[in-house]
Length: 335
Image 1 (cartoon, rainbow, N blue to C red):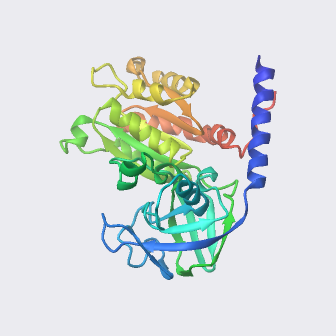
Image 2: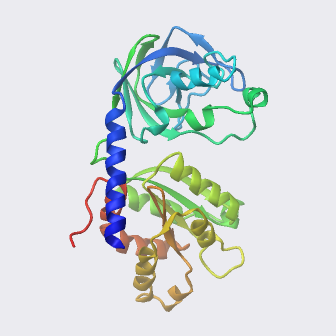
Image 3: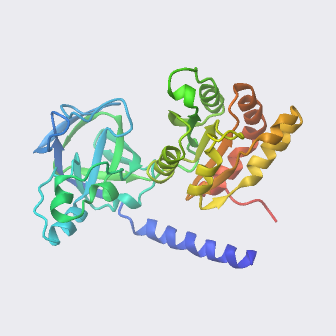
């Protein structure tokens, strides 16, 4: 059974590699769109200044966050128009309309070089909170599934017609991470979160690139939504949760984790629990789990700063190998 699974996995990797080879390395800007105020439709401009760490000069969606510049494939817009939609460039809220790439198939971390400008892909698609005018009219909108978002790594000037060169992510790039603290009192401002910052500190010191930190109440549905978003749209390598793994009726972190995972990896949770038992017998009351959603590892950690520190001191020296295998940048252990 193991050999069959290994063969199928190998074939899947070959197919993915072939798909990557077919992906064009160059494209072209066909449109640039901005809106000076949020909530208003974007309009076309012929050229623009990209501001490092911010976005497009004059665009209301610029800022110190991971969705500074949005891109949409012209081919996808044309397919949508062929279904009868009369949509102009900018109608979907996109900043750059490019040809030559199937953007949604590119991995997060891909970079785009446009002259001196350098963009890095940070998110695939987005959650649609309220259906837009296009959806109301057509019963569909392509931006939530086809649009991608980038950060401006290097600023400069761009114009319509510029060549866009794609740069694949480096295999030895740092692992990306998110940290989610689950605490009713913390979310209500009644207790300072010390565990989340401790995880961030230890991850950063170990060379991880921490992309997001969140403080949530102990709400299963909210946690599931964030785990799905961080795994599917942001494609992070690992998500750490802290809190919500005990016996209280509000402790639902394990249930949320199990609900979103494709495969469980409970050897990690069991190893942490066994190690913690050598420090305190109360570790037996932990219900923490660990699992995998697509290419993202999700690990439940304890809620106390002391227990978090102990768990990570045990885990981090070994975690890189598993993440490397999951990302495809490291081979399996020899048999």
